[in-house]
Image 1 (cartoon, rainbow, N blue to C red):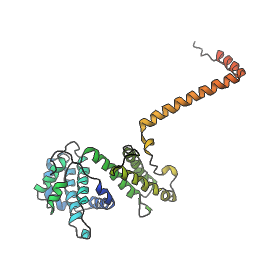
Image 2: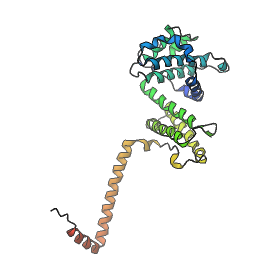
Image 3: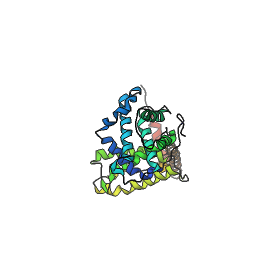
Length: 280
């Protein structure tokens, strides 16, 4: 049984169906009749950011309906990852309100149940609703943003984001998130998170031609760096090291030139005699 307060370890398996889950999420976000679920959300008035909390409660119930009860989903094969994604979604929403309370996810879910929210498979939900361990959640947030932005930029072999300005917002966010992710993935590291990051890099590389054909410049494109380019400390160290080497080489070259051209050395020496600042 999931602890009420301790963070839980959740798998990345739901990312195998992330395209479907992102579509469900968009449907939830644009649904205009969330008020139907309001009666079961009275408890939200006890939370900080009451209006946001109430909205999360309404959306969660509608999301559950879409996944498990809606007539349009009858052809779907239900999978354990449905519960995992619903838990990630609830974490994602509640952490924007209060991300320091480990009990918030389970407590919020229990409040919905206590207020009459009907979940036909409550036992499965009980097992899956938990506050995701911090490092795992951050990695999931990186992957989710990269997947979501990919579909905002490109879907069904077409540029989706309209114009360069709106595309660049997604592109910049992708680059920032990708850097945070790839830094954790040295070449020898093989796990689900790193495999997902590498697969995403391949997907983004594949849309370059489509963006070029749509009139984008090379500078507009998503260039996701290799891991060694992303380590700012390593880059700084390499820059300093290369600078020192460059200075040393320049000194050696200048010394060598003067040794073999004594007449230039003499001229430079004469110039130095007169190159003196005069302070009045």
